[in-house]
Image (cartoon, rainbow, N blue to C red):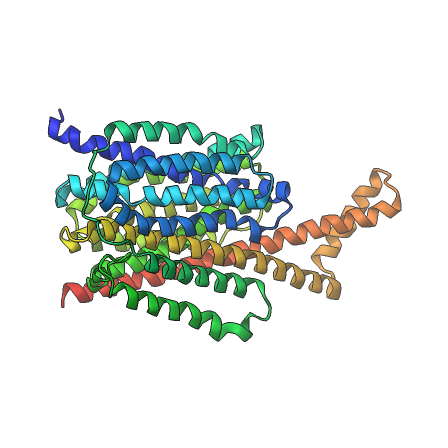
Length: 508
Protein backbone atom coordinates (compact mmCIF):
# COMPACT_ATOMS: atom_id res chain seq x y z
CA UNK A 1 0.00 0.00 0.00
CA UNK A 2 1.26 3.45 -0.93
CA UNK A 3 2.32 5.76 1.86
CA UNK A 4 0.83 9.24 2.13
CA UNK A 5 4.06 10.78 0.84
CA UNK A 6 3.97 8.49 -2.21
CA UNK A 7 0.34 9.42 -2.86
CA UNK A 8 1.23 13.09 -2.61
CA UNK A 9 3.93 12.55 -5.25
CA UNK A 10 1.78 10.52 -7.65
CA UNK A 11 -1.46 12.55 -7.64
CA UNK A 12 0.14 15.60 -9.37
CA UNK A 13 1.79 13.26 -11.90
CA UNK A 14 -1.52 11.59 -12.72
CA UNK A 15 -3.22 14.96 -12.97
CA UNK A 16 -0.63 16.37 -15.35
CA UNK A 17 -0.72 13.11 -17.34
CA UNK A 18 -4.44 13.53 -18.02
CA UNK A 19 -3.73 17.07 -19.15
CA UNK A 20 -1.00 15.78 -21.46
CA UNK A 21 -3.44 13.22 -22.86
CA UNK A 22 -5.91 15.97 -23.67
CA UNK A 23 -3.28 18.12 -25.41
CA UNK A 24 -1.85 15.23 -27.41
CA UNK A 25 -5.33 14.10 -28.41
CA UNK A 26 -5.76 17.35 -30.35
CA UNK A 27 -2.70 16.56 -32.48
CA UNK A 28 -3.48 12.90 -33.18
CA UNK A 29 -7.10 13.15 -34.37
CA UNK A 30 -6.54 15.69 -37.14
CA UNK A 31 -4.46 13.50 -39.50
CA UNK A 32 -7.30 11.15 -40.43
CA UNK A 33 -9.39 14.22 -41.28
CA UNK A 34 -7.03 15.58 -43.96
CA UNK A 35 -9.06 14.31 -46.95
CA UNK A 36 -12.26 15.72 -45.40
CA UNK A 37 -10.65 19.09 -44.66
CA UNK A 38 -9.20 19.24 -48.17
CA UNK A 39 -12.68 18.62 -49.59
CA UNK A 40 -14.55 20.93 -47.18
CA UNK A 41 -12.25 23.94 -47.68
CA UNK A 42 -11.15 23.22 -51.28
CA UNK A 43 -7.43 23.00 -50.39
CA UNK A 44 -4.56 20.69 -51.31
CA UNK A 45 -2.30 18.64 -49.04
CA UNK A 46 0.34 21.39 -48.84
CA UNK A 47 -2.24 23.75 -47.35
CA UNK A 48 -3.92 21.12 -45.17
CA UNK A 49 -0.65 20.14 -43.51
CA UNK A 50 -0.36 23.66 -42.10
CA UNK A 51 -3.10 22.71 -39.64
CA UNK A 52 -0.44 20.44 -38.13
CA UNK A 53 2.69 22.45 -38.89
CA UNK A 54 1.37 25.78 -37.55
CA UNK A 55 0.07 23.96 -34.46
CA UNK A 56 3.55 22.62 -33.80
CA UNK A 57 5.38 25.87 -34.53
CA UNK A 58 3.28 27.75 -31.98
CA UNK A 59 3.53 24.82 -29.59
CA UNK A 60 7.31 24.94 -29.89
CA UNK A 61 7.48 28.64 -29.02
CA UNK A 62 5.08 28.20 -26.10
CA UNK A 63 7.27 25.43 -24.70
CA UNK A 64 10.20 27.79 -24.35
CA UNK A 65 8.00 30.43 -22.76
CA UNK A 66 6.66 27.83 -20.31
CA UNK A 67 9.94 27.54 -18.39
CA UNK A 68 9.92 31.21 -17.40
CA UNK A 69 6.16 31.28 -16.84
CA UNK A 70 6.37 28.33 -14.44
CA UNK A 71 9.12 30.09 -12.50
CA UNK A 72 6.99 33.21 -12.27
CA UNK A 73 3.51 31.81 -11.65
CA UNK A 74 3.87 28.10 -10.84
CA UNK A 75 2.73 24.88 -12.51
CA UNK A 76 -0.90 25.13 -11.35
CA UNK A 77 -1.59 28.58 -12.74
CA UNK A 78 0.12 27.87 -16.07
CA UNK A 79 -1.82 24.61 -16.45
CA UNK A 80 -5.23 26.19 -15.78
CA UNK A 81 -4.63 29.09 -18.18
CA UNK A 82 -3.47 26.69 -20.88
CA UNK A 83 -6.72 24.72 -20.73
CA UNK A 84 -8.85 27.85 -20.90
CA UNK A 85 -6.98 28.82 -24.09
CA UNK A 86 -7.36 25.26 -25.37
CA UNK A 87 -11.15 25.33 -24.96
CA UNK A 88 -11.36 28.68 -26.79
CA UNK A 89 -9.15 27.42 -29.63
CA UNK A 90 -11.08 24.17 -29.93
CA UNK A 91 -14.39 26.04 -30.25
CA UNK A 92 -12.94 28.42 -32.86
CA UNK A 93 -11.54 25.51 -34.89
CA UNK A 94 -14.74 23.49 -34.77
CA UNK A 95 -16.92 26.42 -35.86
CA UNK A 96 -14.52 27.58 -38.60
CA UNK A 97 -16.00 28.43 -42.00
CA UNK A 98 -12.70 29.48 -43.62
CA UNK A 99 -9.17 28.12 -43.62
CA UNK A 100 -7.98 31.22 -41.73
CA UNK A 101 -10.43 30.59 -38.88
CA UNK A 102 -9.39 26.93 -38.77
CA UNK A 103 -5.73 27.93 -38.50
CA UNK A 104 -6.50 30.45 -35.73
CA UNK A 105 -8.19 27.70 -33.73
CA UNK A 106 -5.25 25.35 -34.29
CA UNK A 107 -2.85 28.13 -33.26
CA UNK A 108 -4.61 28.56 -29.89
CA UNK A 109 -4.66 24.78 -29.41
CA UNK A 110 -0.95 24.60 -30.19
CA UNK A 111 -0.08 27.41 -27.78
CA UNK A 112 -2.00 25.67 -25.02
CA UNK A 113 -0.35 22.31 -25.76
CA UNK A 114 3.06 24.02 -25.70
CA UNK A 115 2.44 25.40 -22.21
CA UNK A 116 1.36 21.93 -21.06
CA UNK A 117 4.19 19.92 -22.60
CA UNK A 118 7.07 20.70 -20.17
CA UNK A 119 4.94 20.53 -17.01
CA UNK A 120 5.10 16.75 -16.53
CA UNK A 121 8.90 16.64 -16.59
CA UNK A 122 9.04 19.58 -14.16
CA UNK A 123 6.59 17.94 -11.74
CA UNK A 124 8.39 14.58 -11.93
CA UNK A 125 11.89 16.04 -11.59
CA UNK A 126 10.83 18.08 -8.54
CA UNK A 127 8.87 15.25 -6.87
CA UNK A 128 10.93 12.07 -7.39
CA UNK A 129 14.52 11.03 -6.66
CA UNK A 130 16.79 10.49 -9.65
CA UNK A 131 16.49 6.70 -9.51
CA UNK A 132 12.67 6.90 -9.83
CA UNK A 133 12.38 9.52 -12.56
CA UNK A 134 12.27 6.90 -15.33
CA UNK A 135 9.44 4.99 -13.62
CA UNK A 136 7.39 8.16 -13.11
CA UNK A 137 7.95 9.27 -16.72
CA UNK A 138 6.91 5.78 -17.84
CA UNK A 139 3.57 6.05 -16.01
CA UNK A 140 3.11 9.52 -17.45
CA UNK A 141 3.85 8.05 -20.89
CA UNK A 142 1.31 5.25 -20.38
CA UNK A 143 -1.53 7.73 -19.84
CA UNK A 144 -0.42 10.37 -22.31
CA UNK A 145 0.39 7.91 -25.10
CA UNK A 146 -3.10 6.51 -25.02
CA UNK A 147 -3.91 9.61 -27.11
CA UNK A 148 -2.02 8.36 -30.23
CA UNK A 149 -3.74 5.00 -29.69
CA UNK A 150 -7.33 6.23 -29.44
CA UNK A 151 -6.95 9.54 -31.32
CA UNK A 152 -6.95 8.19 -34.91
CA UNK A 153 -9.67 5.67 -34.05
CA UNK A 154 -11.90 8.27 -32.39
CA UNK A 155 -11.21 10.77 -35.15
CA UNK A 156 -11.99 8.29 -37.89
CA UNK A 157 -15.20 7.04 -36.29
CA UNK A 158 -16.38 10.59 -35.59
CA UNK A 159 -15.80 11.57 -39.22
CA UNK A 160 -17.64 8.48 -40.45
CA UNK A 161 -20.60 9.20 -38.14
CA UNK A 162 -20.62 13.02 -38.14
CA UNK A 163 -18.76 15.86 -39.87
CA UNK A 164 -15.19 17.07 -39.30
CA UNK A 165 -16.15 19.79 -36.71
CA UNK A 166 -16.95 17.02 -34.22
CA UNK A 167 -13.18 16.30 -34.12
CA UNK A 168 -12.85 19.60 -32.26
CA UNK A 169 -16.00 19.65 -30.17
CA UNK A 170 -15.48 16.25 -28.56
CA UNK A 171 -12.19 17.47 -27.03
CA UNK A 172 -13.82 20.25 -24.99
CA UNK A 173 -15.08 17.99 -22.13
CA UNK A 174 -11.58 16.50 -21.74
CA UNK A 175 -10.06 19.98 -21.47
CA UNK A 176 -12.69 21.10 -18.95
CA UNK A 177 -12.08 18.06 -16.73
CA UNK A 178 -8.31 18.62 -16.98
CA UNK A 179 -8.70 22.23 -15.84
CA UNK A 180 -10.78 21.14 -12.81
CA UNK A 181 -8.22 18.48 -11.88
CA UNK A 182 -5.38 20.98 -12.21
CA UNK A 183 -7.20 23.43 -9.94
CA UNK A 184 -7.79 20.80 -7.25
CA UNK A 185 -4.67 18.62 -7.31
CA UNK A 186 -1.68 20.49 -8.68
CA UNK A 187 0.49 22.19 -6.05
CA UNK A 188 -0.26 25.87 -5.50
CA UNK A 189 3.39 26.78 -6.00
CA UNK A 190 3.38 30.52 -6.62
CA UNK A 191 6.99 31.35 -7.30
CA UNK A 192 8.97 34.53 -7.56
CA UNK A 193 12.29 33.26 -8.91
CA UNK A 194 11.47 34.56 -12.38
CA UNK A 195 11.50 38.18 -11.27
CA UNK A 196 13.78 39.48 -14.01
CA UNK A 197 12.58 41.17 -17.19
CA UNK A 198 11.16 38.72 -19.70
CA UNK A 199 13.37 38.02 -22.72
CA UNK A 200 11.09 39.47 -25.39
CA UNK A 201 14.01 40.11 -27.76
CA UNK A 202 15.03 36.47 -27.51
CA UNK A 203 11.46 35.36 -28.18
CA UNK A 204 11.26 37.63 -31.24
CA UNK A 205 14.58 36.36 -32.62
CA UNK A 206 13.62 32.74 -32.00
CA UNK A 207 10.27 33.29 -33.74
CA UNK A 208 12.06 34.81 -36.74
CA UNK A 209 14.58 31.94 -36.75
CA UNK A 210 11.90 29.25 -36.71
CA UNK A 211 9.78 31.10 -39.26
CA UNK A 212 12.77 31.44 -41.60
CA UNK A 213 13.42 27.69 -41.39
CA UNK A 214 9.84 26.82 -42.29
CA UNK A 215 9.69 29.43 -45.05
CA UNK A 216 12.91 28.07 -46.55
CA UNK A 217 11.71 24.46 -46.44
CA UNK A 218 8.29 25.37 -47.79
CA UNK A 219 9.79 27.44 -50.61
CA UNK A 220 12.25 24.72 -51.57
CA UNK A 221 9.51 22.09 -51.73
CA UNK A 222 7.07 24.23 -53.72
CA UNK A 223 9.04 26.46 -56.08
CA UNK A 224 10.95 25.20 -59.12
CA UNK A 225 13.30 28.21 -58.96
CA UNK A 226 14.24 27.58 -55.32
CA UNK A 227 17.80 26.57 -56.25
CA UNK A 228 18.48 30.17 -57.37
CA UNK A 229 17.76 31.37 -53.84
CA UNK A 230 19.46 28.47 -52.06
CA UNK A 231 22.30 30.54 -50.49
CA UNK A 232 19.79 33.01 -49.03
CA UNK A 233 17.42 30.25 -47.86
CA UNK A 234 20.29 28.60 -45.96
CA UNK A 235 22.18 31.67 -44.71
CA UNK A 236 19.17 33.60 -43.39
CA UNK A 237 18.24 31.03 -40.69
CA UNK A 238 21.91 30.56 -39.77
CA UNK A 239 22.41 34.32 -39.35
CA UNK A 240 19.32 34.60 -37.16
CA UNK A 241 20.55 31.66 -35.06
CA UNK A 242 23.94 33.31 -34.50
CA UNK A 243 22.25 36.58 -33.45
CA UNK A 244 19.89 34.67 -31.14
CA UNK A 245 22.76 32.83 -29.39
CA UNK A 246 24.70 36.10 -29.07
CA UNK A 247 21.72 37.81 -27.39
CA UNK A 248 20.92 34.86 -25.10
CA UNK A 249 24.47 34.82 -23.76
CA UNK A 250 24.16 38.45 -22.70
CA UNK A 251 20.76 38.75 -21.04
CA UNK A 252 20.15 38.12 -17.34
CA UNK A 253 16.98 36.09 -17.81
CA UNK A 254 17.44 34.19 -21.12
CA UNK A 255 14.68 32.38 -22.96
CA UNK A 256 17.14 29.52 -23.58
CA UNK A 257 19.91 28.77 -21.09
CA UNK A 258 22.91 28.06 -23.32
CA UNK A 259 24.75 26.41 -20.40
CA UNK A 260 22.72 23.30 -21.23
CA UNK A 261 24.57 22.82 -24.52
CA UNK A 262 27.91 22.60 -22.73
CA UNK A 263 26.81 19.22 -21.35
CA UNK A 264 27.69 16.93 -24.26
CA UNK A 265 25.36 13.97 -23.45
CA UNK A 266 22.42 16.33 -23.16
CA UNK A 267 23.20 17.95 -26.52
CA UNK A 268 23.54 14.57 -28.25
CA UNK A 269 20.18 13.47 -26.83
CA UNK A 270 18.62 16.66 -28.17
CA UNK A 271 19.86 15.86 -31.68
CA UNK A 272 18.56 12.29 -31.52
CA UNK A 273 15.16 13.42 -30.21
CA UNK A 274 14.99 15.99 -33.02
CA UNK A 275 15.68 13.40 -35.73
CA UNK A 276 13.42 10.77 -34.19
CA UNK A 277 10.53 13.19 -33.92
CA UNK A 278 10.98 14.12 -37.55
CA UNK A 279 10.47 10.49 -38.53
CA UNK A 280 7.84 9.61 -35.91
CA UNK A 281 5.41 12.45 -36.62
CA UNK A 282 5.86 12.03 -40.36
CA UNK A 283 4.66 8.44 -40.01
CA UNK A 284 1.67 9.64 -37.97
CA UNK A 285 0.75 11.90 -40.91
CA UNK A 286 1.63 9.72 -43.90
CA UNK A 287 0.31 6.30 -42.85
CA UNK A 288 -3.37 7.28 -42.36
CA UNK A 289 -3.21 9.58 -45.39
CA UNK A 290 -1.89 6.67 -47.51
CA UNK A 291 -4.54 4.27 -46.23
CA UNK A 292 -7.38 6.71 -46.90
CA UNK A 293 -6.24 8.30 -50.16
CA UNK A 294 -4.34 5.44 -51.84
CA UNK A 295 -5.89 2.31 -50.36
CA UNK A 296 -9.36 3.94 -50.28
CA UNK A 297 -10.11 2.99 -46.67
CA UNK A 298 -12.63 4.93 -44.60
CA UNK A 299 -11.21 7.15 -41.82
CA UNK A 300 -12.73 4.86 -39.19
CA UNK A 301 -11.16 1.74 -40.68
CA UNK A 302 -7.79 3.49 -41.02
CA UNK A 303 -7.98 4.56 -37.38
CA UNK A 304 -8.75 1.01 -36.25
CA UNK A 305 -5.79 -0.29 -38.27
CA UNK A 306 -3.51 2.08 -36.31
CA UNK A 307 -4.95 1.12 -32.92
CA UNK A 308 -2.55 -1.82 -32.23
CA UNK A 309 0.47 0.44 -32.74
CA UNK A 310 -0.85 3.06 -30.33
CA UNK A 311 -1.73 0.48 -27.70
CA UNK A 312 1.68 -1.19 -28.03
CA UNK A 313 3.44 2.12 -27.40
CA UNK A 314 1.25 3.01 -24.44
CA UNK A 315 1.59 -0.39 -22.75
CA UNK A 316 5.36 -0.63 -23.31
CA UNK A 317 6.08 2.87 -21.97
CA UNK A 318 5.88 2.07 -18.21
CA UNK A 319 8.08 -1.01 -18.64
CA UNK A 320 10.60 1.03 -20.60
CA UNK A 321 10.57 3.64 -17.83
CA UNK A 322 11.48 1.04 -15.20
CA UNK A 323 14.21 -0.36 -17.44
CA UNK A 324 15.70 3.12 -17.88
CA UNK A 325 16.08 3.39 -14.09
CA UNK A 326 17.99 0.08 -13.91
CA UNK A 327 20.09 -0.16 -17.06
CA UNK A 328 22.53 1.97 -19.00
CA UNK A 329 21.10 3.94 -21.94
CA UNK A 330 23.23 1.92 -24.37
CA UNK A 331 21.23 -1.21 -23.50
CA UNK A 332 17.93 0.54 -24.24
CA UNK A 333 18.39 3.48 -26.61
CA UNK A 334 20.50 1.81 -29.31
CA UNK A 335 18.25 -1.28 -29.73
CA UNK A 336 15.21 1.01 -29.76
CA UNK A 337 16.71 3.12 -32.56
CA UNK A 338 17.52 0.02 -34.60
CA UNK A 339 13.98 -1.33 -34.12
CA UNK A 340 12.43 1.93 -35.34
CA UNK A 341 14.80 1.98 -38.35
CA UNK A 342 13.90 -1.63 -39.19
CA UNK A 343 10.17 -0.90 -38.90
CA UNK A 344 10.48 2.05 -41.30
CA UNK A 345 12.46 -0.05 -43.77
CA UNK A 346 9.92 -2.89 -43.47
CA UNK A 347 7.13 -0.44 -44.29
CA UNK A 348 9.06 0.75 -47.36
CA UNK A 349 8.81 -2.81 -48.79
CA UNK A 350 5.00 -2.78 -48.79
CA UNK A 351 3.45 -3.63 -52.16
CA UNK A 352 0.06 -2.59 -53.47
CA UNK A 353 -2.42 -5.39 -52.96
CA UNK A 354 -0.38 -6.97 -50.16
CA UNK A 355 -1.88 -7.73 -46.78
CA UNK A 356 -2.64 -4.75 -44.55
CA UNK A 357 -0.87 -6.69 -41.79
CA UNK A 358 2.44 -5.43 -43.18
CA UNK A 359 1.45 -1.83 -42.36
CA UNK A 360 -0.02 -2.82 -38.99
CA UNK A 361 3.02 -4.87 -37.94
CA UNK A 362 5.57 -2.30 -39.05
CA UNK A 363 3.63 0.42 -37.20
CA UNK A 364 3.58 -1.73 -34.05
CA UNK A 365 7.34 -2.40 -34.27
CA UNK A 366 8.09 1.28 -34.85
CA UNK A 367 6.03 2.43 -31.87
CA UNK A 368 7.59 -0.26 -29.67
CA UNK A 369 11.04 1.01 -30.62
CA UNK A 370 10.07 4.55 -29.71
CA UNK A 371 8.45 3.55 -26.41
CA UNK A 372 11.60 1.64 -25.47
CA UNK A 373 14.08 4.42 -26.11
CA UNK A 374 12.28 7.69 -25.32
CA UNK A 375 12.00 7.30 -21.49
CA UNK A 376 15.70 6.45 -21.34
CA UNK A 377 16.63 9.44 -23.49
CA UNK A 378 14.59 11.80 -21.31
CA UNK A 379 15.62 10.41 -17.92
CA UNK A 380 19.32 10.20 -18.86
CA UNK A 381 19.16 13.82 -20.03
CA UNK A 382 17.99 14.92 -16.58
CA UNK A 383 20.52 12.73 -14.76
CA UNK A 384 23.53 14.24 -16.51
CA UNK A 385 22.36 17.71 -15.43
CA UNK A 386 22.31 16.63 -11.78
CA UNK A 387 19.25 18.70 -10.86
CA UNK A 388 20.39 21.90 -12.58
CA UNK A 389 18.27 23.91 -15.04
CA UNK A 390 15.28 21.54 -14.71
CA UNK A 391 12.72 23.93 -16.21
CA UNK A 392 15.00 24.93 -19.09
CA UNK A 393 16.02 21.32 -19.77
CA UNK A 394 12.41 20.18 -19.94
CA UNK A 395 11.54 22.98 -22.35
CA UNK A 396 14.55 22.25 -24.57
CA UNK A 397 13.81 18.51 -24.76
CA UNK A 398 10.25 19.24 -25.79
CA UNK A 399 11.46 22.00 -28.12
CA UNK A 400 13.72 19.51 -29.92
CA UNK A 401 10.83 17.07 -30.22
CA UNK A 402 8.37 19.60 -31.59
CA UNK A 403 10.71 21.43 -33.96
CA UNK A 404 11.81 18.05 -35.32
CA UNK A 405 8.19 16.99 -35.73
CA UNK A 406 7.27 20.26 -37.45
CA UNK A 407 10.18 20.15 -39.88
CA UNK A 408 9.61 16.45 -40.54
CA UNK A 409 5.92 16.95 -41.34
CA UNK A 410 6.65 19.94 -43.59
CA UNK A 411 9.47 18.19 -45.44
CA UNK A 412 7.88 14.78 -45.87
CA UNK A 413 4.40 16.07 -46.75
CA UNK A 414 6.02 18.34 -49.35
CA UNK A 415 8.16 15.47 -50.59
CA UNK A 416 5.12 13.18 -50.74
CA UNK A 417 3.11 15.68 -52.81
CA UNK A 418 5.95 16.52 -55.20
CA UNK A 419 7.04 12.90 -55.57
CA UNK A 420 3.46 11.77 -56.26
CA UNK A 421 3.07 14.43 -58.93
CA UNK A 422 6.39 13.67 -60.62
CA UNK A 423 5.80 9.92 -60.47
CA UNK A 424 2.41 10.43 -62.10
CA UNK A 425 3.96 12.52 -64.88
CA UNK A 426 6.67 9.90 -65.51
CA UNK A 427 4.15 7.07 -65.63
CA UNK A 428 1.91 8.97 -68.05
CA UNK A 429 4.91 9.76 -70.27
CA UNK A 430 5.76 6.07 -70.39
CA UNK A 431 2.14 5.30 -71.15
CA UNK A 432 2.16 7.66 -74.12
CA UNK A 433 5.39 6.16 -75.44
CA UNK A 434 4.82 2.43 -75.32
CA UNK A 435 1.49 1.75 -73.59
CA UNK A 436 2.22 -1.53 -71.88
CA UNK A 437 0.31 -2.57 -68.78
CA UNK A 438 -1.88 0.51 -68.63
CA UNK A 439 -3.15 0.31 -72.21
CA UNK A 440 -3.91 -3.36 -71.74
CA UNK A 441 -5.79 -2.44 -68.57
CA UNK A 442 -7.68 0.20 -70.55
CA UNK A 443 -8.64 -2.21 -73.30
CA UNK A 444 -9.93 -4.75 -70.82
CA UNK A 445 -11.86 -2.03 -69.02
CA UNK A 446 -13.41 -0.88 -72.31
CA UNK A 447 -14.62 -4.38 -73.03
CA UNK A 448 -16.17 -4.62 -69.56
CA UNK A 449 -17.91 -1.29 -69.96
CA UNK A 450 -19.30 -2.19 -73.39
CA UNK A 451 -20.92 -5.27 -71.83
CA UNK A 452 -23.21 -2.91 -69.96
CA UNK A 453 -24.13 -1.11 -73.22
CA UNK A 454 -22.70 2.26 -72.28
CA UNK A 455 -22.60 4.62 -75.28
CA UNK A 456 -19.22 4.85 -76.99
CA UNK A 457 -18.56 8.51 -76.16
CA UNK A 458 -18.67 7.65 -72.45
CA UNK A 459 -16.36 4.67 -72.85
CA UNK A 460 -13.27 6.74 -73.58
CA UNK A 461 -13.89 9.17 -70.73
CA UNK A 462 -14.52 6.39 -68.22
CA UNK A 463 -11.44 4.47 -69.35
CA UNK A 464 -9.29 7.60 -69.09
CA UNK A 465 -10.68 8.30 -65.63
CA UNK A 466 -9.95 4.77 -64.46
CA UNK A 467 -6.43 4.86 -65.89
CA UNK A 468 -5.75 8.23 -64.22
CA UNK A 469 -6.98 6.85 -60.91
CA UNK A 470 -4.73 3.80 -61.34
CA UNK A 471 -1.74 5.99 -62.22
CA UNK A 472 -2.36 8.24 -59.20
CA UNK A 473 -2.57 5.22 -56.92
CA UNK A 474 0.77 3.86 -58.12
CA UNK A 475 2.48 7.27 -57.99
CA UNK A 476 1.29 7.84 -54.41
CA UNK A 477 2.46 4.35 -53.47
CA UNK A 478 5.95 5.00 -54.84
CA UNK A 479 6.14 8.30 -52.94
CA UNK A 480 5.02 6.51 -49.77
CA UNK A 481 7.67 3.76 -49.87
CA UNK A 482 10.39 6.28 -50.83
CA UNK A 483 9.49 8.45 -47.83
CA UNK A 484 9.76 5.53 -45.40
CA UNK A 485 13.02 4.35 -46.89
CA UNK A 486 14.37 7.86 -46.24
CA UNK A 487 13.08 7.77 -42.65
CA UNK A 488 14.82 4.41 -42.14
CA UNK A 489 18.14 5.83 -43.38
CA UNK A 490 17.85 8.92 -41.15
CA UNK A 491 17.06 6.77 -38.10
CA UNK A 492 19.92 4.38 -38.81
CA UNK A 493 22.32 7.32 -39.12
CA UNK A 494 20.98 8.71 -35.82
CA UNK A 495 21.61 5.39 -34.07
CA UNK A 496 25.21 5.28 -35.30
CA UNK A 497 25.84 8.90 -34.27
CA UNK A 498 24.36 8.28 -30.82
CA UNK A 499 26.33 5.05 -30.29
CA UNK A 500 29.66 6.60 -31.29
CA UNK A 501 29.04 9.66 -29.12
CA UNK A 502 28.03 7.53 -26.13
CA UNK A 503 31.12 5.34 -26.40
CA UNK A 504 33.45 8.32 -26.84
CA UNK A 505 32.06 10.03 -23.74
CA UNK A 506 32.06 6.83 -21.70
CA UNK A 507 35.69 6.00 -22.39
CA UNK A 508 36.93 9.58 -22.49
